[in-house]
Image 1 (tube, one colour):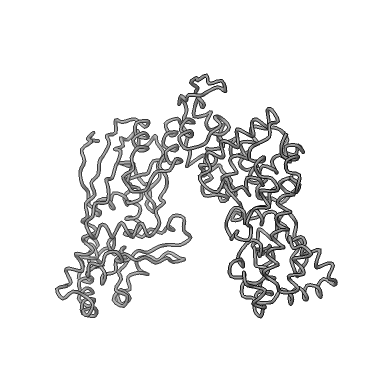
Image 2: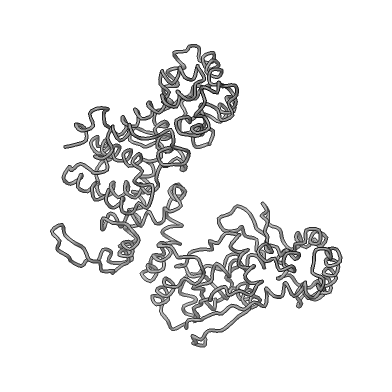
Length: 610
């Protein structure tokens, strides 16, 4: 292979043939194909307008490197022979082009469907490029035979872009857009759309609109094959010409690869349990943060890079003495840390999402108050290295967790809070020193919260939902405890107590209804079928039905108390008095929050301070 590092150009047609033949491959230290369909559409829009779309960076592969390293194909293509070049920058663009033009039988990334991209000829010929590349998704793959309905093309004015990879049925060596069949179709298209096309459009302009895509030139830069893998990984990590910023995980993936660590392909994709992955979209970074907290008490991005094997970092003793330390000695040492962090992350996930005596009740992922609390819990479990069933530890973890949820300290950029809380935890474990997070959240703090303004999706909203789950509420009608099985099959959700479309309520008793109807003070966990039964009913009506179902008013009152509906709030339900109901229920919710944090109303100073 010629060892040259001079930039050149290649058009889309040549690049796609190289992709289809398996000449281009994706290194394992790369991220995957992550673009959204709209981003692929925008790429074609830019090409139609001959805009610059960035440099393509390749690494020439000699036969030894091609066979020694591990590679992925470009999305939808396959590797059949010996690859020629590794794509360092340009994967998203090449994958988008190949997917749209070659229409592989592969679902679009992070989608459950197959996508087909089209050229809207009416828009394109009128130079309305911003809407010229629409797309559709299909449950089943549509191959060329399914898509070559030329009457449909004329009716919709749209042609699938996979026409660019089709061949002339009369001459397979010729492209379809240069065929007699396509030329005849173009004439029909112009005739039937003449009222909306420019006057000078002829059939050759239709073909040229497609040819413009195939002839578009990318500047490409090949790095020679004599560069070693460590050099290549460093170059990749510093390159960002595609318009899609590399995440910290992407960069760590590249930096770790030379040490024999396949962070994305092996440690993340193959070894992390699916339940843990699905809990939080940032879980890959969170696992790195667990390691960083445990090793150096901090977890912002700049500290994560200290986990690269052999990386020297400056540490500081409490007395101010500074020294250099290598936190991770080798790739094998990193992998061991990763495995341990995953184990503790899974234990933390279990504590956050289960409803046992030591757990926090986030029965579904969407009810987790703050995903960023998991790394702290996992690192604390790792640091504590004792029985999580130890009563003193359980009490402390419970107090810290609910105090953090209702303080909203984890609601924004939380790396600093995570580090601070973990360091406080270490001092509690080693010295028994009270944590700042707990000390600042006392009964007075909770009493001053405005829970009526707490809407769906916020950390405090989810916190109350979790407390409800932990309280073991029974369904309004069925009366069965809404246990784990009900939660996982999605028959239970957070629904309105005063129904959203409730009718015939006295306006004098619902003046705050529009303001607070979606608030947590008007929501609880009930079965979907129950919600459908009460969807438009006044509370006074469905409470009567509940009494008939359960046999006594006392049983209904007891059931509703499990939903944080006090005796006073119950009376408001009977009176269809929304305005006073939300006031009384807010009081009851706050009482349960205070109880779970472990403080007593009126005695916060005695309980919190040493």
